[in-house]
Image 1: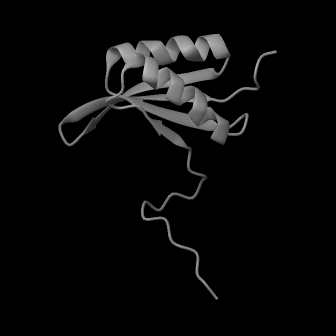
Image 2: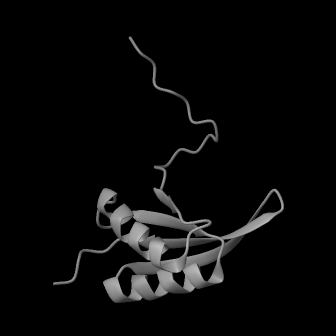
Length: 95
């Protein structure tokens, strides 16, 4: 009988999906965020990673236009490289 793989980080809760936008231009990041949200259920938390201020601004505009719920933006330092983590909750599509 196969065994379930253990979580290397030891977390007990569900893992939030993430969409990595690091290194993308603003227009491409907006399109990827839109298509990436199809894999996420309404009410589920999502983390979007970006390392460019113009991409962060574009994603925040997109979130406001679509109607997803913004939780917070957090600066993350990773081995000398800095990026922003944008946390949001996917809401139902507006009609």
